[in-house]
Image (cartoon, rainbow, N blue to C red; front, side, top):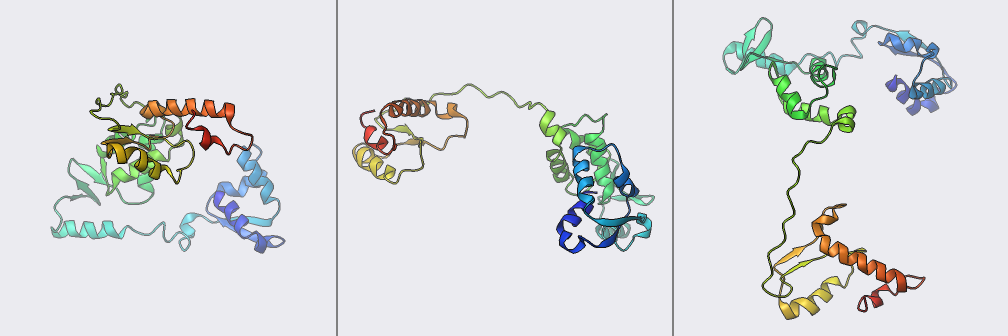
Length: 264
């Protein structure tokens, strides 16, 4: 139904006011107009469809081979691999019946719907309980194999809304913050954090007032992680004090705050 609604939205200027037929292989779509129990999204779709004059025509998928040519296309890579196994060119697999088997007795799974079904059974089913990427891959790899299985599992789990919303993050707790070594000379270790955008004169001021007299610093702590002030707590605290001071004395136009920095 999502595809039908999308097509009608895209081609509305062609179809509005015309009588047409929507051919579908999903018999449930043909009853959509008369369906009573609807989700909010389905209700919006039903209201949208009332703007068009059309009829549903159900055509089973087995009779719709032209449209389904790509989705029903045979996995040519699998066919070539199977032929190479028969000829003895590839020795990592062997044939049992009509299927390929690899190390550990794992079945080679063809590309297409079967892989999606296995991913659903291993991750989404009630008895699966939405395991992590590593757990999902381990469960699948016990009995099945296909190229780039790990990448497919990673993409599938990342796109799982239930997993992303409900699962508790179980990473190891971060260790205690460690202080920097005691500096041996002035301005050896410094930290920076710009309250506003990058001032044009910042580098010039730093060079004239620090580098010229004390040399280049050994370490510069900058660009700390967003929303993690503890990574540069000292600078964040000083900036907070500066902002509090400037709020007391800055003018209504807020253009004289630079002149107040020396006093602050």
